[in-house]
Length: 102
Image (tube, rainbow, N blue to C red):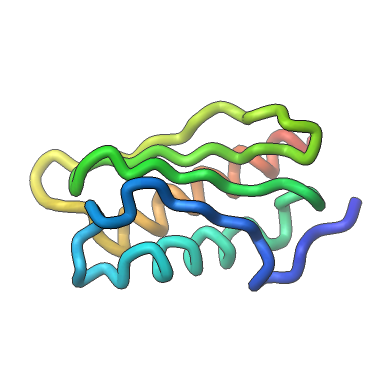
């Protein structure tokens, strides 16, 4: 199975304007997702992120055949989303993709 190069993991963020400015926004979120998933994302797959509020976001890996894996979510109750939240959702996606490969 071929995996995409690190900078080529397709990542789309719906609701990016809701991300706190100090996080680096959509660019930083997608960079973290690309870093975490580059080695495990199958060719032709992409990542779709939905930012629901400045406290909650969801992400889904969509495989080349159109199947969507289970949505992963991050919610923070005592502060806004942060770069730590970005790492958490990226690692959750990577773990899910690893278990799908098995």
